[in-house]
Amino acid sequence: MIRCGLVLGTLLLGACVGAPDASTPQPVAAVEVPRYLGAWHEVARLPMWAQDSSSVSCEDTVATYAARPDGRIGVLNRCLNALDNDKPREAAGQAYAVAGSNNARLRVSFFWPFFGDYWVIGLDPDYRWAVVGEPSRRWL
Image 1 (tube, helix red, strand yellow):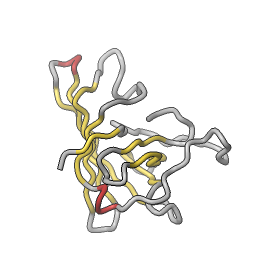
Image 2: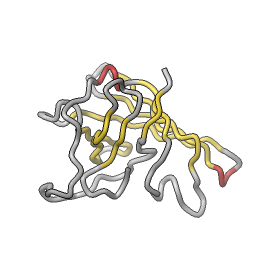
Image 3: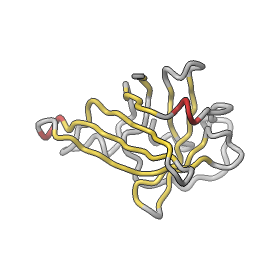
Image 4: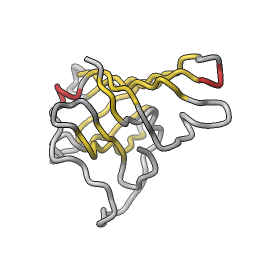
């Protein structure tokens, strides 16, 4: 199944943020992880240095999520670097659901021991699209 969504291409370090206020994006009520697993194609994003810089311009970005034997979620982000003859770029990581979030708030790591926030802030009831961001609004 091919799905389109606003997904993070590469999250490198988590943000340190305080308690959410009224302007903080809120996660959806719940995410059914088995339905969320698979490939998600990015259709838009806020610029981020790991995907948009003087040497990188990620296109055709796909985030693939897979169940892991340890109960975590495997994360593989792939794109083609338009500034380097469409050379493929990949970042592999892992995620776990934040307790009490009904799987809508994840902590993702591409470089252990650093984890960052990954919040599903919009989700189609049929899991055809998703909007993913984090509390400080630095990436979407």
